[in-house]
Image (cartoon, rainbow, N blue to C red; front, side, top):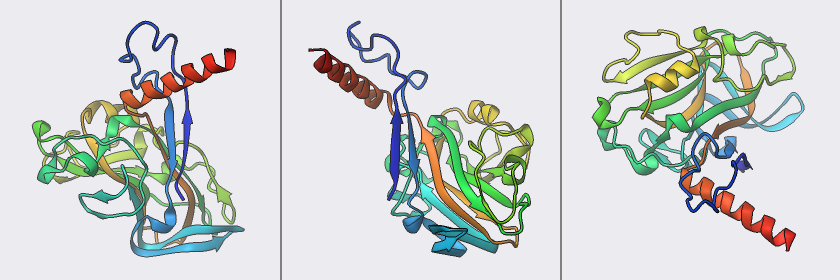
Length: 254
């Protein structure tokens, strides 16, 4: 089951100044959704519902290739059908092949991605990666490709034989992430040019994300659990959340 957490950081007088328009990504709460690994998309050497290191219902990714993912919004994505997703808002962008609506969510809404991992041998090579399938609106060139985050750079506590978790895997050093084009041009000017997350968000402003997942191409067996993505809600949803909080506060005071 996908779990969802909403943390409110709504600022000041949202309602009583007369407008709901002030709820933006900067002051909205952050939603964290944990992927249901049992119903996530999978390709290659993937075994679900395993018991590893004392934890049950985890997914094991074996080499040479094991891939698992969830769609950004849940349901269908342009590259296949998944029954589990990260519950992000829909982008509405028309992109490669006319993808729009339920086929993606804004990349700029993503604030973090994390998961727990277990490798009996310890140490992970550069071919263990977190990836995002992203695409641009038609007006920005109809580009389509994959952001890939090198976990060997982002997972410093590589202890074998135990479960490990080190937080947000998007905010690593500049040498941890790159963009690989599939259709169209590369906005970073070349293949495998490493970028920090902040630069990716700037360069790919207005782009959408269709699915988010993990690739294991190391030849080792790696198990994962608690795969989650955090994002900001749509401004309208944030405003309604603030309204509910203000209303409940008034009821408690009365």
